[in-house]
Image (cartoon, rainbow, N blue to C red; front, side):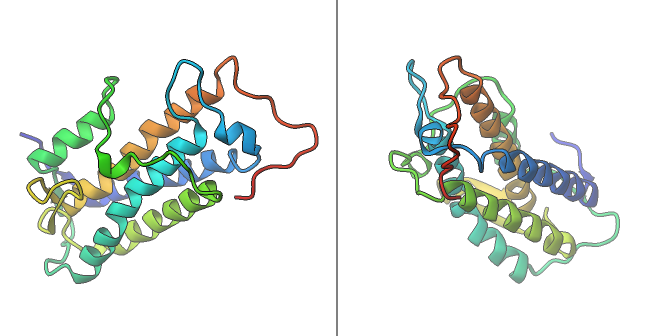
Length: 196
């Protein structure tokens, strides 16, 4: 059984991680359309496809998290502890596992990434940061919801706040691997980055 940790310390750690993600995403703004669209010859998603997956996933969590943060009936108290629910703990652990998992169909429609996918993901990171700030007054452990995948997977608000940065981190690592591929396209001499 998971041990409770300080909600405030967890919130601050997640906020730092989200700001680090913003810094890493800045480096993607100069990628060309060809670089964003390129996919590894051995299979798998390219940079734009990974970002589209992140945007779709976050879009399924963020409205729910915003509503829960605004409407929560249990306020946070100084020194409040948070710990993941059973399902949340398993989900969070899966984000740091080296094993590959089948992506739920809800989050896997990435065949045609949107043109502004870098900007869309950047906006979501800002939104996560804003929600983390607003959620300092809410009891994460006592504010309960369900996974967007199934209403039969119970989560608490802290699970959601912890899962999203962990999921973002997992796939930003995937982007790093794509961009370090020996056949990843070189940047264009003329500039012409994709609008972001």
